[in-house]
Image (cartoon, rainbow, N blue to C red; front, side, top):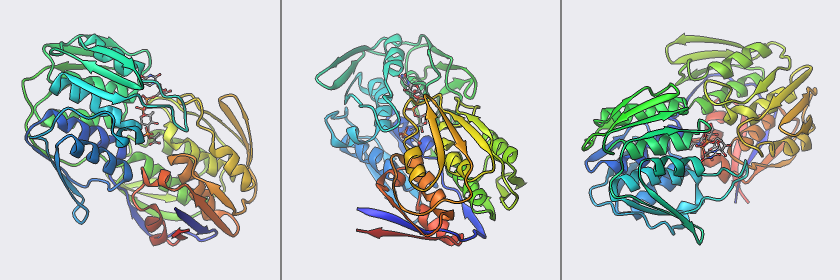
Length: 420
Ligand SMILES: CC(=O)N[C@H]1[C@@H](OP(=O)(O)OP(=O)(O)OC[C@H]2O[C@@H](n3ccc(=O)[nH]c3=O)[C@H](O)[C@@H]2O)O[C@H](CO)[C@@H](O)[C@@H]1O
Ligand SMILES: C=C(OP(=O)(O)O)C(=O)O
């Protein structure tokens, strides 16, 4: 099993390029199922999750060519068949559930393993299924599977009890080729949804209101093949902002959409970090000033992203004074707290809130990447901890960060991946 070893204490220098967003490219690849022409994804992030979703499509008959030199993925779904939902791959990744909407739309049937909970929470799928039922699908759950059947989906009004990202995406994908108009109310507003919609519009879909709480989809007869470059990964960018802040360094980050990062930038600035855009997609982050504690509450976009919560906790563990982090999205997203405590952080958890007292130093030891962002938080803490930090279970990190150790090493960190 691979591990990441960091010898803490190095200042970072230079610049880093941010990859395209995992959470944009996964639904985009899933939605390509709707189109029988070829689709090319440019600047695709070569991530474990991307290889899982492309393998799922390949098992269903897609022809997919992944060029790791040019970072392009060419998808040809001309021979795609309904998915065999019993695949190991489907169970491996929660985002595999995103193929449900397009599969039901294209074939009128889809059978998938029920996704279980994961390390960050129970993550039910009731809103996805409610949306598909509203479009006329029949849903049956049994023997660990969910089977959805439809004789032609029809547009309808769907109100989401919570602005779920995945449910909004599944319903959009299911309604693009449905008859008539679908209106999603209380839709999620995350930038990755707007990116999926931009992709679908470029393919010929008729969709209005992405990025707001009300998305209107007028069904069309077919979609055409296109080339598309997804948005930059705001969570990877946020992770590198924290890397500069925690190491008290000044670096340049390329591949920034300032609007998407507003809540993260606001909290870092409030803590004392200097951040300046230098053009429409690059910024300089200067973390050399003393930082103070801040309070954070995770919220659906445009609120503070839950996917940056763990990384901020590492930073606040080493910021002067007290901080408070309230996690409102996932009920079990504090598993990194005990790992940070092993390194010397002073954090107490009461229900959904963590109370952090800044300490002067952390000390390196063996810690687990209990989930993707928790793993990033361990690497960030390791960058400044005394001595060596060994991060285990890094398959979680590989799900969502493109060569994080190479990017950090180029910036001057003493970090390497080892096999043990
Ligand atoms: C691949 C992807 O894009 N993943 C992101 C997506 O996950 P994902 O799409 O799974 O997140 P959701 O927005 O759906 O989940 C948010 C909350 O809604 C609940 N819920 C969701 C669906 C449902 O049918 N019923 C229900 O109760 C979940 O349990 C959770 O408590 O958005 C999350 C919230 O920004 C991010 O952390 C993930 O990185
Ligand atoms: C929770 C995350 O992803 P997923 O929804 O794919 O598990 C994440 O990206 O932090």
